[in-house]
Image 1: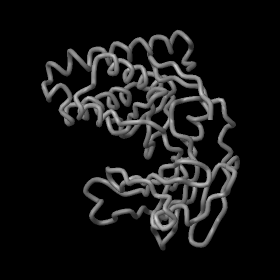
Image 2 (image 1 turned 60 degrees about the horizontal axis):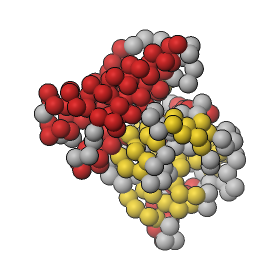
Image 3 (image 1 turned 180 degrees about the vertical axis):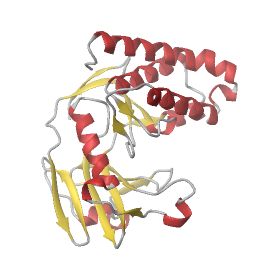
Image 4 (image 1 turned 135 degrees about the vertical axis):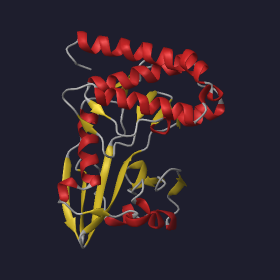
Length: 267
């Protein structure tokens, strides 16, 4: 899919067709998918073992649940199984309380990604989402396009190569999403990808589009800064981090916010 990119902000405008969500029920669950795909996903697509048996499982990522990178008939994709976090995780694990199809984690995130993709924001295109209902609970999975030739910002921090220029690009990226009203529930260095064609934001579980307010923006930025400190950016030196990373990040964030305001909030 061809895109136009501005390296400073990670901006790109999608030139491909918009996502066309379609849903079909199958067995104890249902699948939502992009009707523009050359092949319709089936339940097997959400089973890592199925891909592994066919030699199409490339690798497994880290993090809760562990994303799986697979070569599907529609291209390179990321398969993610939803897992709970926090204190309730040991009790429910990957189970969520059923509250209707359209409120399942996978269907909600699929719809949000489709909207952000339509707006040309740098997010992975959604391919398919699924839920399987089991009594009062359900489990869920999501397949998205893989961002090629990308590393996480966390990897770059561990390598010691995060500099002021990249920090500024991160600030511009966050400003762009905030200008669009996107409240990212888990804005951290693991969910920011640095690729050859710019910066991307991933993992939109529990995220939403807001129309007003600023406290959520402050909370997003605070979460990101805690992530940088936890990963020991600037060797964990808070003063150095503020000077060498956070100051240029916020400078570009504020610049991007001002530009969005001048444009009436348009991206």
